[in-house]
Length: 383
Image 1 (cartoon, rainbow, N blue to C red):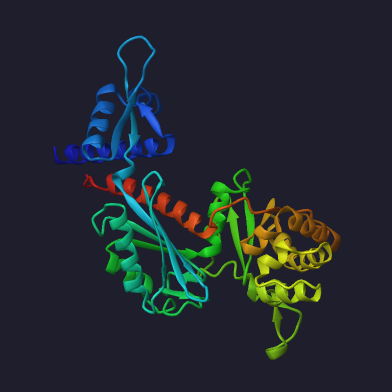
Image 2: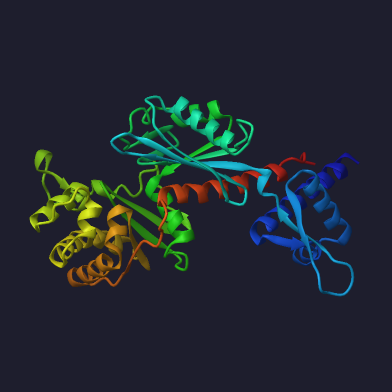
C-alpha cells in the first residue's frame, strides 16, 4: 500500500507539473483542450485543475461561448504565482544597476535604476527590496534574480572574471547575494543576454543558430547553437576582444579591441574629420568613406567567427552595431566577401530596447517557470 500511495502522489505531481507547463506554453486552455493534449481522463483533468487553482498556480480567465451545451472555463497560469528580477550591471563613469521585476508571464511590474555602491551585496539587496515595494510585494517574494554582467561568470570557481566594476570580482559574490536575498541568483555575460534578446525579440528568431558580435566600448561575441548559448569551461567563451592581431608582443601587442573597440572607432572617425563624443555618435554621423574603413576592420574580426562557426547569421549589436544599422551591415557584408571566400549573412540588431536588460528579463522568466514546474514535480515523495 505504501508503494501505491507513493506512486499515486508522484503521478499526481507529474500530471500537475505537465499541465502547468502546458498553460505556460500555450497561454489559455480549457479542460477539454487539456484532456485532448495530455490524454488524461475527465476526472483526473478536473482534479489537476482544482489543485492548481487552489495552489494559486492557475486561474480562470474566461468562459467559452457560442457553442452547444454549457460554457467551459478557460484557464491560464497565474502571473502572480511567482516573480523574478533582472539586473543589468553597467560599466559607466558611475556604475549603474538597472533592474526590472517581472511576473510569471514576463510582464514588467516594477523598474529601477540606481548608482552602484562599492559593496554589491547591500546595493543589490536594497534594489531588490525597492522593486518589491514598488510592486506591492512582501520583501523577499522574488524567487530568482538574473544578473547581466560586463564580464564572465566562472561558476566552478565562484568568481566573475574580466569585469571592471569595483567589488564585482570578489570570489563568492554570487553565492553571497543568493544567501542575502534568499533567492536563486543566476549570472551571465551581458553579450550572451543580448543574444537571448535577439533570439526572442530581434532578427534571429527564425534561424537555427547565429553569432552576435557586440561593438561598443569593447567587443564581445555570443554564440547561439540551436537555441543554446556556448559559454565555455569558465564562462569566458566570446571574449573575442582579446584575440591578438598580428605577432606583436608586450607593448607592441594589439588585439581586436585595438582594431574595432570604442577608442579605435573614435580615432578612425577623427582621421576622417568626424568629431564625436562617443563611438555610436561617430557611426551615426559617419561618412561613407569612414563607414567603409570601419566595415573593413569589423570584417577582419568576423572572418574568424565565420570560418570557425559557419553560422547562418551574424548579428551586429551593441551601441555601434545599432547606430550603424543596415548601412554598416551592408558594408561589412561586402568587406567580408571581398576579403574571404565566405558567404555569411550579416544583419544589424533588431532589438530596440536595452538588449542586456531585455535578455536578462527573458532568461529570468524562463528560469522562474522551470523552477516552479520543478518544485511542483518534486513535491511528491518517491515511491
